[in-house]
Image 1 (cartoon, helix red, strand yellow):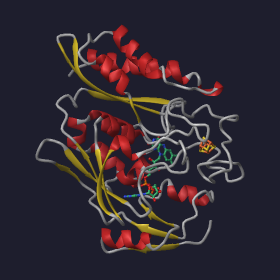
Image 2 (cartoon, protein in one colour; image 1 turned 180 degrees about the vertical axis):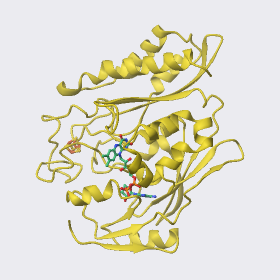
Image 3 (spheres, protein in one colour; image 1 turned 180 degrees about the horizontal axis):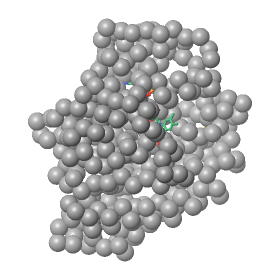
Image 4 (cartoon, helix red, strand yellow; image 1 turned 90 degrees about the vertical axis):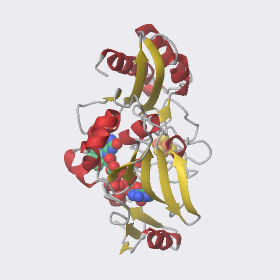
Length: 329
Ligand SMILES: Cc1cc2nc3c(=O)[nH]c(=O)nc-3n(C[C@H](O)[C@H](O)[C@H](O)COP(=O)(O)OP(=O)(O)OC[C@H]3O[C@@H](n4cnc5c(N)ncnc54)[C@H](O)[C@@H]3O)c2cc1C
Ligand code: SF4
């Protein structure tokens, strides 16, 4: 591992200033992803600025019924919080489906959103990878890509974003609050992560030194009827092959409103807007759920090794909606 300096700042402004003056520095949350990548020489920061004590580590209720999650809130505390479990089961389920109990105790809400892809070539410095080393090529497209993307891919990168939490936040129309060298920003969750076109090395729209301070989740009247379903190679401690975060408002057999995001299929959490549009106002029936899923996945461009994800995503989305409609409100 390359030598690095460790620093703490007194406040958010100080932390942002420290990184602004250090082009190769990085913020340190729980370190559960960043330190692993440093051990592999994939990440080689010369300065780590510890941000765990700078932002809130609490969940607060907002006046309109939403919640505000401090960026330093540990994943385990967030998943167990009564407001999260009560109002947004999909959020709690997404967090509990990720990593292990020990990792969730250390991992922070902010760090979770910015974890890097699990593409095996990204993690192996001896292989070409446009994300790790821009311009060297993509080893996955003609190589091993079973876990990688089917939607929004480019000829430069087919990586998937690995966070389960981010998928649930995308479905819930959350907003990410940041503080950076250019001031404060509020970024809709759907716009935080990018598709790989043009700049596959950039996972998000954040600037260097831009700190996530909080995440706000707006009130959702049917948030209680929400679910996260994750399909993976083993029952725990594995990343999603495909996941679905969904919330449905059903009355008299009609879908009044719906929110859907897919995970494990793209370089970012994939908000299924085509499926949502087809479902709104229509009957809450299996054939309609399947047709909506097929419409969303019509834009998929799978590779030979991950074509199985297209029917898997269709079936997982259909099953999740059926469970929500059939289950208790
Ligand atoms: C074996 C294993 C299995 C896992 N399985 C899953 C899984 O199934 N699903 C899942 O979703 N996750 C999984 N994870 C990933 C885990 O959830 C992440 O490692 C964790 O959430 C990252 O949080 P952290 O606070 O430790 O981030 P760090 O490792 O500290 O940081 C991650 C990145 O975020 C940046 N950063 C940290 N905080 C901030 C901030 N506030 N503002 C701006 N930048 C910041 C860092 O600079 C770094 O680039 C797994 C991890 C491991 C090791
Ligand atoms: S898919 Fe992306 S991360 Fe993986 S090898 Fe290709 S460029 Fe690198």
